[in-house]
Length: 115
Image 1 (spheres, rainbow, N blue to C red):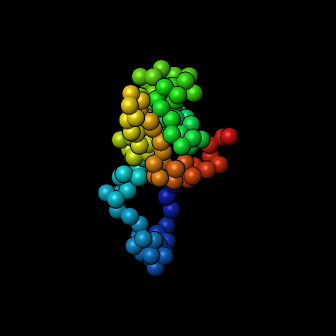
Image 2 (cartoon, rainbow, N blue to C red; image 1 turned 135 degrees about the horizontal axis):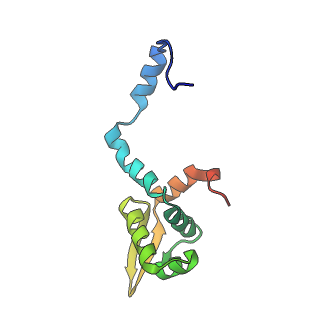
Image 3 (cartoon, rainbow, N blue to C red; image 1 turned 60 degrees about the vertical axis):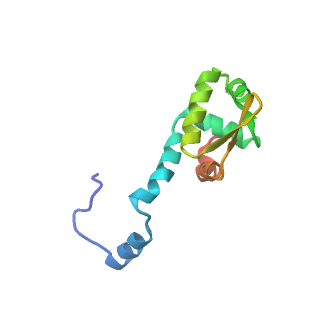
């Protein structure tokens, strides 16, 4: 089965209405970057751990995931750069939490993430 029609059957009023509502590719780039950041299982696991708590330090996250702290740090940086996670320094610790965008993205995944 091919993915294209054998005949041109454009419903112009419907197509125009949808086209008018769509955001531009440029406007969607930040959203796509956030979604792409969760495509890695380790980063998805990090966001789920952060969703279970208000805030966690990198040491806690490394222990929870059973991963090396430098690996967790790398993934947190990707999540922070994409706007999914925010970080703040508290003395010698760096605390991480999900942003509103991070919570919204996880909510969109909803039932797709096994419990």
